[in-house]
Length: 432
Ligand SMILES: [Zn+2]
Ligand SMILES: [Zn+2]
Ligand SMILES: [Zn+2]
Ligand SMILES: [Zn+2]
Ligand SMILES: [Zn+2]
Ligand SMILES: [Zn+2]
Ligand SMILES: [Zn+2]
Image (cartoon, rainbow, N blue to C red; front, side, top):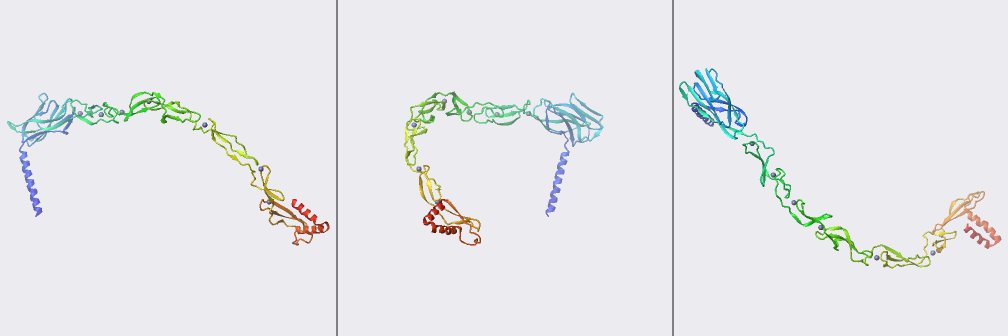
């Protein structure tokens, strides 16, 4: 059902358009056809005159019609075949053609060439073919369709800036063209930049000067807070003002306080100095010397000495007594019998007999060779050594020590010489 309806609609539409086309065909029209509707000064353009819906004819005249301020006609040429007259009157700018028999002349019938004048006004213009179509004495009405063309400028914006207080723009350099480009507000680096970075327009600016002085070693000035521009530049006026801000060195017992000179206008600290008021006897320089120092001996007291200020001679600190007293060595000194500690002066302290441990055999005695033994003091480390007599032939295994043998030997002597000799021997042995 739907398909049938669609089909009927299409049929109706085709009929309607055919009816319209038929109505159209009754009217003879001619128009100018060009390749491009946009033209430039100096361009040469070929225009084709196209005839449509025209009944058979015997002759035809065409006057190319245009604005003569914009175009000039260069040439014209008929495209029809079989004419017995075919000409173009360049002076009157009229093209005419005639045939013996009537012909069908629909389609391109004539081309003519126009040149856009070098001073043609920019903008819209139009052309049309002024027609005269005849068949013998009968003249056909013909609708001449206007063709609109635009004469455009090939702009030239080469770096020619225009400007006002706020903006800049480029204007086309071609005469008669009012086109503009690159329009925008001026561009400055900062509030104090007077020249636009793009168009170089120069404006008047007002710097924002600081109320606080700026300065270097020799001058002071007020500087712009934005760009640093200086004004009120003048040399410092140095005066002597003893304020903490200008203090170079404090007063002490030797020298008065030293201040830098300062500018009375901007307050800048100078390089030159001046002294102010007297010395300060309470504040010493720190240079000291020690007087009346006495070294202590083993028997007499010494003195550390008094500390004086080297610059003003004031007594800063009294010394203290250094007690007399021997100074004993850490190490023990010893002889065969005793050990002690000794002062440099020769005095002895903690003197006592060695405290020997047990003997230790360091070499066993044999039948023919003497051995040895030793013992040491547990306090000072003194080592006492003694020989062990040889045991004699066949006696190697005898456990009796050399020492025992000595005593046996001595016992014999003692029996003959008495106890006194034994004591003497013992003392001798210890001294070995
Ligand atoms: Zn232009
Ligand atoms: Zn600018
Ligand atoms: Zn500034
Ligand atoms: Zn100053
Ligand atoms: Zn002092
Ligand atoms: Zn001493
Ligand atoms: Zn000892």
